[in-house]
Amino acid sequence: MAELYVNTQSAQSVAGPEEKGGATQVSEYCKDLLTRGREELSVEELRAERYFLQRQRNVEERLKSLTEMKEQLSHELEEKRKLLLLRESQQVLHAASSQTSDSCRPPAVSSFLIYDESQSTAARPAGNSELLDEIFLQPDDTGLSLKIQFPRPDCPGGTTGDLQTLVDPHPSSVPQEPGSYTTNKLSPIQETSVEAGTWSLLEDQRQNQNQNQNQDQDQNQSQDQNQEEMEPGPAGGAVDACDPEARQQLLDICDVTSSPGFHCESRPLPPVNSCLQLGGDLYHIYSRVVDEEMFSIYKGATNDDNVLVKVDRCRVPWDFHQFRRLKKNSSVDSLPQISCFLFLDGCITVYTCPPDHMFTELTECEDSVVRKSLLLLQLVLELHSCRLLHAALRPSILVASYRGLNLERVFPVDWSSSVDVDVQQDVTSVQQLSSAHSYIRVGLLEPTSPPQLVDLLGVAETVHLLLTNSRMVLVKDDDGWTAERFSQDESCNMFPGRGRRGAGFSGRC
Image: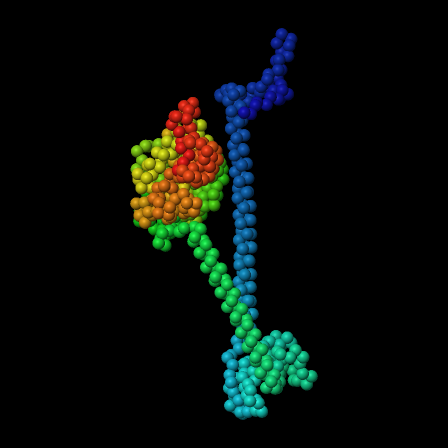
């Protein structure tokens, strides 16, 4: 707040000194400023008046600077537009000049003709004979002579030379007229040798090309066979369950775009910075928790709630469809609200936590592994009861929902590998799931095993990571498959203090 400036000298000149008891008294303020006609102002009112005047001047100066900046930007924009128009005109001129140069090129050589040179010139075809490849009979020879058009080094337009010029690099010393070339006579032996050498060279080249093509085809076939043996594909050549085009057709049938919480944006995916504007709401982005090739997941918040934002490079809102199916069939109301924003080159899915709830990563929860495991099994039970398969459960995409200090729910924020069995009824075995190929390759699952087993293996890997903070490595012994960490133990005790005879987590599959 501005302070009242007191000028002692001006106060003395206006109010004048006052003498009382022989002492000189000077007024600390100007009385004329406090009295205006019949109004009498206090010092605080005078200070407020000066403050608002200064504030008004600051606003006017700010407005003036913004106006000047706007004019400067408009001027720069106009200059950039002129440069763009100039560049486009130069490109048009360059294209026109290239077309003109192409039109000035010599015409293509006509097909060759065969005639007898002993005939009169009137019997030859009309036109420019120098532009024709000629095969003709010499009057005194029984063999064929070949005249071929090829470009001469000293004539850019191209002239007609003969086979002898190509074979013999040393030209004849007989003077010739400029621009004219005659056919040199070859003996029958030379013609036969040249012809045999030419055809043998062409035959060798053709055989080499055929051999190279056959070798490439054999290599490609062997690579394809090895890849098919290493990675089992869908049974019977069926369409991949995660194919984006097939999923889009299924979503068109389900009419996902008319669902509440779905929004369409006619622009590309916006960049994710500290703030993200979606559908009129402002989301504050705190950190990125998952970063993969096709999607990224961010932790953020609005003015009222915590949110998780998934930015997907695929333009199929499959996560939105699958999570709505789970939420519709769930008997617990602790699942978050979901909304989807479809862009020209991808989609953004936003998970908003319910009132009085908070999100955190599953690996950062301080609750016991028993509680996390039970909630994870509850999630799988709900998924299978509403005929959904997640097929890629792992700790990095699992989120815990707290209400106060109580852990209530565990749910996934990525559904890229999931399957809706109601609409994808052809998925009947694990070999149709790309996420199960590693289990099939090592022999843990048979290709015809039920697809629900993939979710149970995902639970096992997640629980193993929560217990040991390491990835599960499977080994096979006489009793079956087990985790390498627990291969020498009968069980892993999840209840400290109860001993081996208490409830435990078996490390065997």
